[in-house]
Length: 246
Image 1 (cartoon, one colour):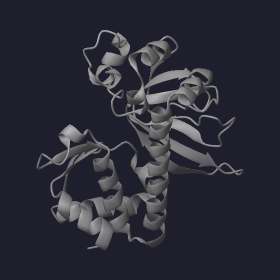
Image 2 (cartoon, one colour; image 1 turned 180 degrees about the vertical axis):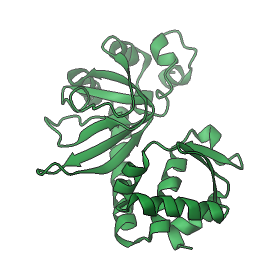
Image 3 (cartoon, one colour; image 1 turned 120 degrees about the vertical axis):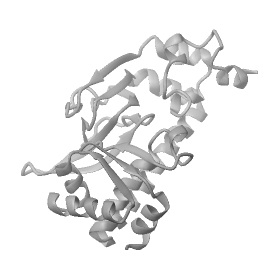
Image 4 (cartoon, helix red, strand yellow; image 1 turned 60 degrees about the horizontal axis):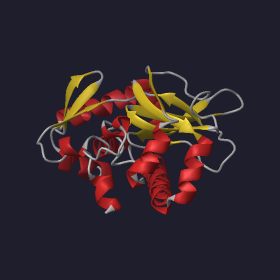
């Protein structure tokens, strides 16, 4: 019975703020009972942040965790001499933060305009201890991120320039709204990173990224909508190039 209540979005026991949440069913909160959602909602704060906003103070704070409701967050590491490297991207409905850890050496920054639902560490850790399914979902996200990091090590270490750019675009496609995904012929995606950041993420120069984007367009794999978005017109061909080269 409790499972049916949790899945019924019209259930009056679920807080209104959670009923309208885009990330509730796909994120870790989907494991919570209505009573737990109600308790969590008493402590949540929803905020919007503009692109390039440094979240390191508010969101890498070990006492604050967040669900990403919309947009893309980039995770970076900064070297002692000031050089920085993008080491990961997080998308809705990812969980942003590290429960049961006192610190993090990652810097979080809004890659696009983003919306967050934030809550105190003490509250989420208490619920995690009481709800094995929620802890399981968080573990699944961390394992997925680990798998993606390993795949990206392969991309950076072994793939050619065009394979890297194709892999990057394919990764973005995999994180768009499933309802807008493979069921349509042309998939339009917004580029969450500037060309300089894409080059940094791929270990390429800006000029090389631009050349390979043009190369993919000439091959009929993508179409250029504008500098901030592209259209994937041949997803199968894109996968082939990303995994096997041209």
